[in-house]
Length: 321
Image (cartoon, rainbow, N blue to C red; front, side, top):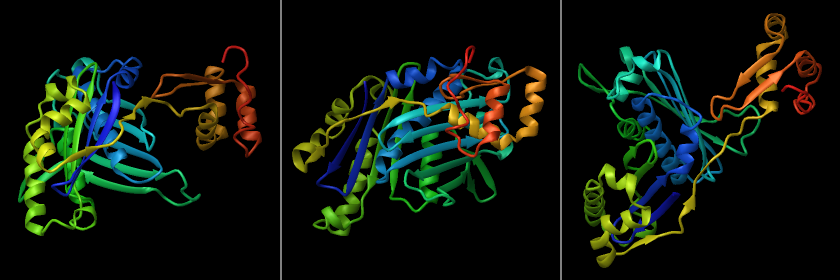
Protein backbone atom coordinates (compact mmCIF):
# COMPACT_ATOMS: atom_id res chain seq x y z
CA UNK A 1 0.00 0.00 0.00
CA UNK A 2 1.31 3.41 -0.98
CA UNK A 3 -1.28 6.05 -0.34
CA UNK A 4 -2.05 9.28 1.46
CA UNK A 5 -5.48 10.12 2.80
CA UNK A 6 -6.59 13.69 3.57
CA UNK A 7 -9.50 14.40 5.91
CA UNK A 8 -11.32 17.38 7.41
CA UNK A 9 -13.18 17.65 10.72
CA UNK A 10 -16.47 19.53 10.55
CA UNK A 11 -16.75 19.91 14.32
CA UNK A 12 -13.23 21.27 14.82
CA UNK A 13 -10.88 23.52 12.81
CA UNK A 14 -8.65 20.60 11.90
CA UNK A 15 -7.24 19.19 8.68
CA UNK A 16 -5.43 15.84 8.79
CA UNK A 17 -3.44 13.39 6.72
CA UNK A 18 -2.62 9.71 7.12
CA UNK A 19 0.11 8.08 5.08
CA UNK A 20 1.06 4.44 4.48
CA UNK A 21 4.07 3.60 2.30
CA UNK A 22 5.29 0.07 1.54
CA UNK A 23 6.66 -0.80 -1.92
CA UNK A 24 7.87 2.77 -2.55
CA UNK A 25 9.80 2.61 0.73
CA UNK A 26 11.19 -0.82 -0.16
CA UNK A 27 12.35 0.64 -3.49
CA UNK A 28 14.48 3.07 -1.46
CA UNK A 29 15.87 0.34 0.79
CA UNK A 30 16.72 -2.16 -1.95
CA UNK A 31 19.27 0.31 -3.26
CA UNK A 32 20.87 0.82 0.16
CA UNK A 33 22.45 -1.15 2.98
CA UNK A 34 22.11 1.11 6.00
CA UNK A 35 22.20 0.08 9.69
CA UNK A 36 18.77 -0.44 11.32
CA UNK A 37 18.91 2.81 13.32
CA UNK A 38 19.69 4.79 10.17
CA UNK A 39 16.91 3.06 8.20
CA UNK A 40 14.45 3.92 10.95
CA UNK A 41 15.38 7.61 10.93
CA UNK A 42 15.40 7.78 7.13
CA UNK A 43 11.97 6.13 7.02
CA UNK A 44 10.53 8.59 9.52
CA UNK A 45 11.76 11.51 7.42
CA UNK A 46 10.27 9.89 4.29
CA UNK A 47 6.91 9.85 6.07
CA UNK A 48 7.37 13.44 7.23
CA UNK A 49 8.30 14.72 3.77
CA UNK A 50 5.26 13.03 2.21
CA UNK A 51 2.89 14.46 4.81
CA UNK A 52 4.35 17.97 4.60
CA UNK A 53 4.40 17.97 0.80
CA UNK A 54 0.71 17.08 0.67
CA UNK A 55 -0.15 19.73 3.25
CA UNK A 56 1.29 22.55 1.12
CA UNK A 57 -0.64 24.06 -1.76
CA UNK A 58 2.15 24.45 -4.27
CA UNK A 59 3.47 22.75 -7.40
CA UNK A 60 7.06 21.73 -6.87
CA UNK A 61 9.38 19.75 -4.63
CA UNK A 62 9.75 19.68 -0.86
CA UNK A 63 13.25 18.74 0.30
CA UNK A 64 14.18 17.76 3.85
CA UNK A 65 17.91 17.86 4.60
CA UNK A 66 19.45 16.96 7.93
CA UNK A 67 23.19 17.43 8.31
CA UNK A 68 25.71 17.29 11.13
CA UNK A 69 29.21 16.33 12.20
CA UNK A 70 27.79 13.11 13.66
CA UNK A 71 27.64 9.57 12.22
CA UNK A 72 24.93 10.69 9.78
CA UNK A 73 26.73 13.34 7.77
CA UNK A 74 23.82 14.09 5.45
CA UNK A 75 20.25 12.87 5.04
CA UNK A 76 18.09 14.00 2.11
CA UNK A 77 14.46 13.21 1.32
CA UNK A 78 12.63 14.75 -1.63
CA UNK A 79 8.91 14.59 -2.31
CA UNK A 80 7.14 16.30 -5.20
CA UNK A 81 3.63 17.71 -5.17
CA UNK A 82 2.47 14.60 -7.08
CA UNK A 83 3.89 12.45 -4.22
CA UNK A 84 6.86 10.95 -6.03
CA UNK A 85 9.69 10.55 -3.55
CA UNK A 86 13.33 9.56 -3.23
CA UNK A 87 15.77 9.48 -0.30
CA UNK A 88 19.43 9.01 0.53
CA UNK A 89 21.81 9.21 3.47
CA UNK A 90 25.59 9.56 3.82
CA UNK A 91 27.50 8.25 6.82
CA UNK A 92 30.80 9.53 8.22
CA UNK A 93 31.54 6.23 10.01
CA UNK A 94 31.44 2.55 9.16
CA UNK A 95 27.90 1.11 9.43
CA UNK A 96 29.12 -1.44 12.01
CA UNK A 97 29.95 1.42 14.39
CA UNK A 98 26.30 2.50 14.69
CA UNK A 99 24.31 0.99 17.55
CA UNK A 100 21.01 -0.68 16.69
CA UNK A 101 19.17 1.58 19.16
CA UNK A 102 20.99 4.85 18.36
CA UNK A 103 18.74 7.90 18.53
CA UNK A 104 18.42 10.75 16.09
CA UNK A 105 20.19 12.98 18.59
CA UNK A 106 23.17 10.63 18.74
CA UNK A 107 23.40 10.21 14.97
CA UNK A 108 22.56 13.70 13.75
CA UNK A 109 23.45 16.05 16.58
CA UNK A 110 27.04 15.33 17.61
CA UNK A 111 28.51 18.35 19.42
CA UNK A 112 25.17 20.18 19.00
CA UNK A 113 25.98 20.55 15.30
CA UNK A 114 22.81 19.14 13.72
CA UNK A 115 20.62 21.25 11.43
CA UNK A 116 17.32 20.56 9.73
CA UNK A 117 16.75 22.39 6.45
CA UNK A 118 13.38 22.30 4.70
CA UNK A 119 13.32 23.69 1.17
CA UNK A 120 10.27 24.43 -0.96
CA UNK A 121 11.28 24.56 -4.61
CA UNK A 122 8.35 25.62 -6.87
CA UNK A 123 8.39 24.10 -10.35
CA UNK A 124 7.73 27.56 -11.85
CA UNK A 125 10.59 29.28 -10.00
CA UNK A 126 12.21 31.97 -12.10
CA UNK A 127 15.92 31.57 -12.99
CA UNK A 128 18.02 33.18 -10.28
CA UNK A 129 15.14 33.23 -7.81
CA UNK A 130 16.09 31.26 -4.68
CA UNK A 131 13.66 28.67 -3.30
CA UNK A 132 12.09 29.21 0.12
CA UNK A 133 14.23 27.67 2.82
CA UNK A 134 13.72 27.22 6.55
CA UNK A 135 16.54 26.15 8.89
CA UNK A 136 16.28 24.97 12.48
CA UNK A 137 18.87 23.55 14.86
CA UNK A 138 18.25 20.00 16.09
CA UNK A 139 18.30 21.08 19.71
CA UNK A 140 15.77 22.45 22.15
CA UNK A 141 16.94 25.22 24.46
CA UNK A 142 15.47 25.44 27.95
CA UNK A 143 17.35 28.29 29.57
CA UNK A 144 20.96 27.18 29.86
CA UNK A 145 20.02 23.54 29.18
CA UNK A 146 20.36 22.23 25.62
CA UNK A 147 18.50 19.01 24.84
CA UNK A 148 19.00 17.12 21.56
CA UNK A 149 15.95 16.29 19.47
CA UNK A 150 15.60 12.51 19.49
CA UNK A 151 13.08 11.75 16.75
CA UNK A 152 12.06 12.97 13.30
CA UNK A 153 8.62 13.88 14.67
CA UNK A 154 10.25 16.13 17.28
CA UNK A 155 12.49 17.69 14.62
CA UNK A 156 9.54 18.48 12.34
CA UNK A 157 7.51 19.86 15.27
CA UNK A 158 10.45 22.10 16.18
CA UNK A 159 10.65 23.32 12.59
CA UNK A 160 6.92 24.04 12.52
CA UNK A 161 7.14 25.84 15.84
CA UNK A 162 9.89 28.09 14.50
CA UNK A 163 8.30 28.78 11.12
CA UNK A 164 5.17 30.70 10.29
CA UNK A 165 3.03 27.61 9.94
CA UNK A 166 -0.26 26.48 11.38
CA UNK A 167 -0.22 24.59 14.68
CA UNK A 168 0.83 21.06 13.65
CA UNK A 169 1.14 17.68 15.32
CA UNK A 170 2.84 14.73 13.65
CA UNK A 171 3.31 11.04 14.51
CA UNK A 172 5.73 8.85 12.52
CA UNK A 173 6.73 5.18 12.41
CA UNK A 174 8.89 3.04 10.13
CA UNK A 175 10.42 -0.42 9.85
CA UNK A 176 12.04 -2.45 7.08
CA UNK A 177 8.80 -2.85 5.12
CA UNK A 178 6.52 0.08 5.95
CA UNK A 179 6.42 3.79 6.72
CA UNK A 180 3.37 5.28 8.43
CA UNK A 181 2.42 8.73 9.62
CA UNK A 182 -0.37 10.95 10.93
CA UNK A 183 -0.45 14.74 10.65
CA UNK A 184 -2.95 17.12 12.25
CA UNK A 185 -3.11 20.84 11.52
CA UNK A 186 -5.22 23.49 13.17
CA UNK A 187 -6.90 25.64 10.55
CA UNK A 188 -7.63 29.36 11.02
CA UNK A 189 -10.83 29.99 12.96
CA UNK A 190 -12.28 31.71 9.90
CA UNK A 191 -13.23 30.16 6.57
CA UNK A 192 -15.08 26.86 6.71
CA UNK A 193 -15.15 26.86 10.50
CA UNK A 194 -16.36 30.43 11.01
CA UNK A 195 -19.43 28.99 12.76
CA UNK A 196 -17.23 27.95 15.70
CA UNK A 197 -16.62 30.50 18.44
CA UNK A 198 -12.97 30.78 19.67
CA UNK A 199 -13.59 28.60 22.71
CA UNK A 200 -15.29 25.86 20.69
CA UNK A 201 -12.50 25.98 18.11
CA UNK A 202 -9.83 25.65 20.81
CA UNK A 203 -11.70 22.78 22.46
CA UNK A 204 -12.11 21.05 19.09
CA UNK A 205 -8.39 21.29 18.32
CA UNK A 206 -7.58 19.93 21.78
CA UNK A 207 -10.09 17.08 21.38
CA UNK A 208 -8.72 15.99 17.99
CA UNK A 209 -5.14 16.11 19.31
CA UNK A 210 -6.14 13.88 22.23
CA UNK A 211 -7.62 11.34 19.82
CA UNK A 212 -4.50 11.53 17.64
CA UNK A 213 -2.29 10.80 20.63
CA UNK A 214 -3.91 7.38 20.98
CA UNK A 215 -2.32 6.18 17.71
CA UNK A 216 0.31 3.47 18.14
CA UNK A 217 3.36 2.68 16.02
CA UNK A 218 1.95 -0.77 15.29
CA UNK A 219 -1.26 0.76 13.95
CA UNK A 220 0.64 3.21 11.74
CA UNK A 221 2.69 0.36 10.30
CA UNK A 222 -0.01 -2.29 9.85
CA UNK A 223 -3.34 -0.58 9.15
CA UNK A 224 -4.59 1.21 6.06
CA UNK A 225 -5.25 4.97 6.30
CA UNK A 226 -8.99 4.35 5.94
CA UNK A 227 -9.06 1.96 8.91
CA UNK A 228 -6.91 4.29 11.03
CA UNK A 229 -9.28 7.16 10.27
CA UNK A 230 -12.31 5.13 11.34
CA UNK A 231 -10.63 3.85 14.51
CA UNK A 232 -9.29 7.20 15.65
CA UNK A 233 -12.29 9.37 14.92
CA UNK A 234 -15.27 7.01 15.10
CA UNK A 235 -17.02 9.11 17.76
CA UNK A 236 -16.12 12.31 15.95
CA UNK A 237 -17.49 10.89 12.71
CA UNK A 238 -20.90 10.15 14.16
CA UNK A 239 -21.30 13.40 16.12
CA UNK A 240 -19.61 16.15 14.12
CA UNK A 241 -18.51 14.62 10.85
CA UNK A 242 -15.07 13.73 9.51
CA UNK A 243 -14.86 13.90 5.73
CA UNK A 244 -12.12 12.12 3.80
CA UNK A 245 -11.04 12.70 0.22
CA UNK A 246 -9.94 10.15 -2.39
CA UNK A 247 -6.61 8.57 -1.45
CA UNK A 248 -3.59 9.74 -3.45
CA UNK A 249 -0.92 7.26 -4.63
CA UNK A 250 2.74 7.55 -3.59
CA UNK A 251 5.61 6.21 -5.69
CA UNK A 252 9.39 6.10 -5.77
CA UNK A 253 10.94 8.06 -8.60
CA UNK A 254 14.44 9.37 -9.24
CA UNK A 255 15.09 12.45 -11.36
CA UNK A 256 18.75 11.78 -12.11
CA UNK A 257 19.94 12.00 -15.73
CA UNK A 258 23.06 12.29 -17.86
CA UNK A 259 22.19 15.96 -18.34
CA UNK A 260 22.40 16.57 -14.60
CA UNK A 261 25.68 14.66 -14.28
CA UNK A 262 27.05 16.76 -17.15
CA UNK A 263 25.95 19.85 -15.24
CA UNK A 264 27.97 18.66 -12.21
CA UNK A 265 31.04 18.11 -14.41
CA UNK A 266 30.75 21.66 -15.72
CA UNK A 267 30.64 22.94 -12.14
CA UNK A 268 33.76 20.90 -11.29
CA UNK A 269 35.57 22.63 -14.11
CA UNK A 270 37.49 21.34 -17.12
CA UNK A 271 40.83 21.21 -15.30
CA UNK A 272 39.48 18.98 -12.52
CA UNK A 273 37.68 16.70 -14.98
CA UNK A 274 40.80 16.35 -17.13
CA UNK A 275 42.81 15.32 -14.06
CA UNK A 276 40.22 12.60 -13.30
CA UNK A 277 40.39 11.40 -16.91
CA UNK A 278 44.21 11.28 -16.78
CA UNK A 279 44.10 9.22 -13.59
CA UNK A 280 41.13 6.92 -14.23
CA UNK A 281 40.45 7.06 -17.98
CA UNK A 282 36.80 8.03 -17.43
CA UNK A 283 34.59 9.90 -15.00
CA UNK A 284 32.26 7.47 -13.26
CA UNK A 285 29.60 8.19 -10.71
CA UNK A 286 26.59 6.47 -9.16
CA UNK A 287 23.36 8.27 -8.26
CA UNK A 288 23.03 8.49 -4.49
CA UNK A 289 19.26 8.03 -4.72
CA UNK A 290 18.73 5.18 -7.19
CA UNK A 291 22.26 3.72 -7.62
CA UNK A 292 22.16 4.18 -11.41
CA UNK A 293 25.72 4.34 -12.80
CA UNK A 294 26.93 7.05 -15.18
CA UNK A 295 30.16 6.96 -17.15
CA UNK A 296 31.71 9.78 -19.17
CA UNK A 297 34.75 8.97 -21.30
CA UNK A 298 37.14 11.52 -22.85
CA UNK A 299 34.83 12.15 -25.83
CA UNK A 300 31.82 12.70 -23.55
CA UNK A 301 33.78 15.12 -21.39
CA UNK A 302 35.01 17.00 -24.44
CA UNK A 303 31.41 17.52 -25.50
CA UNK A 304 30.44 18.68 -21.99
CA UNK A 305 32.85 21.60 -22.24
CA UNK A 306 32.35 22.27 -25.97
CA UNK A 307 28.78 23.50 -25.59
CA UNK A 308 26.66 25.62 -23.30
CA UNK A 309 23.66 23.44 -24.02
CA UNK A 310 23.55 20.49 -21.69
CA UNK A 311 21.28 18.56 -24.01
CA UNK A 312 24.07 18.67 -26.59
CA UNK A 313 26.63 17.71 -23.98
CA UNK A 314 25.17 14.28 -23.37
CA UNK A 315 25.15 12.23 -26.51
CA UNK A 316 23.65 8.72 -26.23
CA UNK A 317 25.97 6.54 -24.13
CA UNK A 318 28.61 4.84 -26.19
CA UNK A 319 29.48 1.21 -25.72
CA UNK A 320 30.48 0.44 -22.15
CA UNK A 321 28.53 3.36 -20.58
